[in-house]
Image (cartoon, rainbow, N blue to C red; front, side):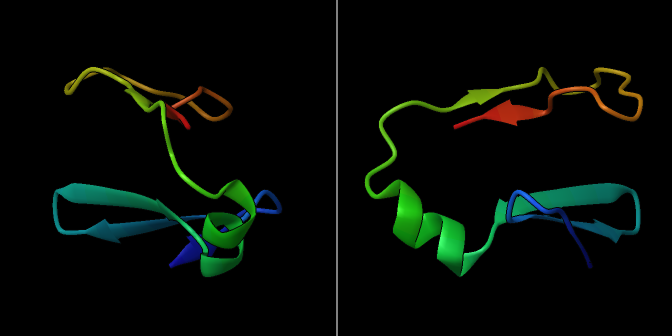
Length: 53
């Protein structure tokens, strides 16, 4: 599992990639009222936005 300075995490498992936020980030955000995800199958490179919370 890899963590970012912004309290995100990323885990590669077989052909899947899982993305989440740390417990600290969850506490700081409070209620999530908006979530925008990248379309499945989108080719990404380093620095691309994957999700907006």
